[in-house]
Image 1 (cartoon, rainbow, N blue to C red):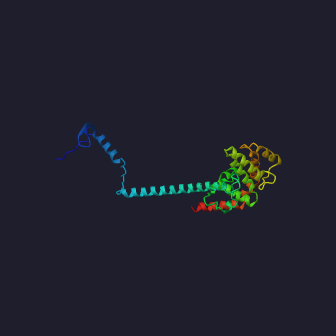
Image 2 (image 1 turned 60 degrees about the vertical axis):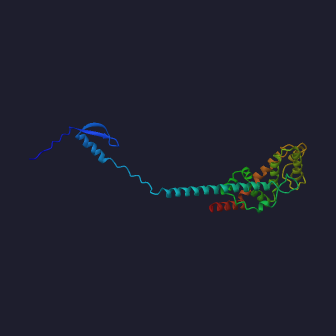
Length: 259
């Protein structure tokens, strides 16, 4: 005798909810048709990707530590190189302003610039900055030394020497030293028979000779401004076109590419 099962889509079926320990939490009911629909949604639900964890984390940690050590070493080396370059420039500026001359206000070593390899710590960016203005050039000790070497080759280094001693003079605090330095600068660069006479007009020369009788930090300001303008309009453009400057750019570029 055959039995036929009746499909009753609206018959209520019990649904139980359990926690992770198997304890029944609640009881609900739904139809058999709802059960099938719920089952189909579960079947077609995309599977969560399997999370793959490395078996040996110690190796990865060692690699991370090694990478951190390498990066730290590179940063340290770059800082050392940068500090070395700054130190070299500071010493260079100090050498420019300190030597055994007849007076502290006239501090130069004539052959110093020619003996230095200025491209040792010079980057291409720094050398190219010099072309923006004479102020930027003179603010960089390497640029100052390179420019003075160029003026020396043209037998006109008295202009940059005068500008430098005026910079030193303006920073003098002692009244006694101010008067002494003023007399030596006037004798060295201003008076008619000065060994390094700079090219200023007669009125400015007379103005300086009177002002040093009661010296102030501004005694040579007008004369210094004239000489700066002369270098800016004449010597500075020639320096930027000179072989000396172009060779420095090439050396700095080659040095940067080898780093």
